Length: 213
Image 1 (spheres, rainbow, N blue to C red):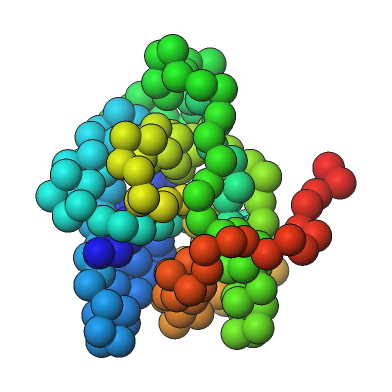
Image 2 (spheres, rainbow, N blue to C red):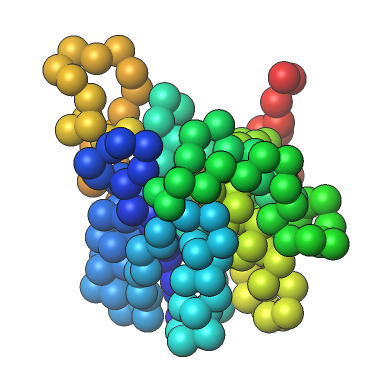
């Protein structure tokens, strides 16, 4: 079973493309014969992890891909690492602004994604979708959920998981805006490609996709 998640809108936005993309990708995968479900997460520290934990308990997935919006990024970002740090530059949707707090008290400094990020990168590029391996998921609710997911999956051997950041969709931007965006159809297909490549890959590719800074 495959679990996809996206977020509700945050930061004054009226929409967050991670949720319609996750929901549509789950439908696309079901049409291909795969058992897939999508769950919307609140953009709230603590509560987002609790909703995710309930979904893990209910669905018992073998693969979990959480998605979030990274407005301004030009590509699908396959996140490599989640860090044990909440440091909010803006309040979450409940008004919380944690600064320099651990996601999990006493937890390890970081967790790596268990998705084959290099194979997923190659598959996305082959599909004509701009993509990258990202070395930071930030310190807001996206990283909070990513870390919470990987912390939970340590007790679920055999279940793989990770986080994908997606750009804006065009409808969020004024006409002619230079800010990068991707059509919702591309965002949807990108999440489905990550699922397909993960299911087809047991050992990740060894190709360069690092960062100089």
